[in-house]
View 1 (cartoon, rainbow, N blue to C red):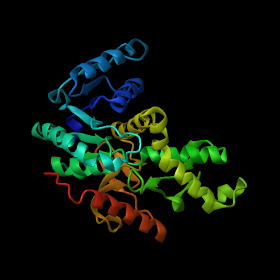
View 2 (view 1 turned 90 degrees about the vertical axis):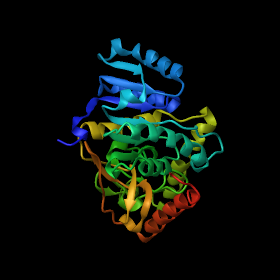
View 3 (view 1 turned 180 degrees about the vertical axis):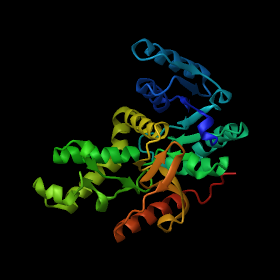
View 4 (view 1 turned 120 degrees about the vertical axis):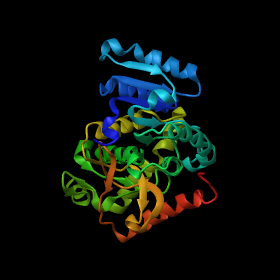
Length: 320
């Protein structure tokens, strides 16, 4: 039995109770996966208020405990989800958040590290790839225990957009967004399919033949989704909450499922010392391995470009 197996997989912690953290907490309560949810925030009254509000749903769900807590209360939970940080504002890119959120993460990860936490850290705060890398560097944890939500939501947005375009159940579509969770992300069109049928073939079956025009249009819809939502309602939280639950389920249920999470790359795809999203196997131990994807030359260039953009944005950042 390893250290992860000794932890309580019916207990989960959330650090940061803004719109995203609170919505994730409520989504976890509805999931019936847990019997204890611990909410941690610098604003203890906010965390207590969210815990009380969600607790009033329990009579309609199942017995569980949802409470405001401290870092000490999190140490036996198998997974800690971190959503703390400054929120993305209108006209602000995810990369604009770097300096503010690195400072916050140094404090959070420092508190977790000094308590010798043995579980898995799931990073949801933006810019998620950089904060996943920062968490890895600051904590010194093995890379299987530090996961970013990555492009799981972006990929869901792509599947949804394709489903509307093709009038097909999105669950029948296999399509990933990879790279940075941000402006340099891109769809992995070469591997996209509908129940095993290559996407281009299925599009032609549906009467669509201008593939370049349509794929560019759909990629732009996905890339701009967050900006559009933020412009209309100032924040996004439902989609990311459900995406976070999907990742957590894969770990808790030991699924060995494949999701495009953000993880550390060390010479895979000729990239190193960076975190970004590649379809990866996830199970009870966290990240297992990246898929050995066959990329087109254009996709290889885009992935390298995405990595370079992330590295450029942190070249003057220290994680110590």
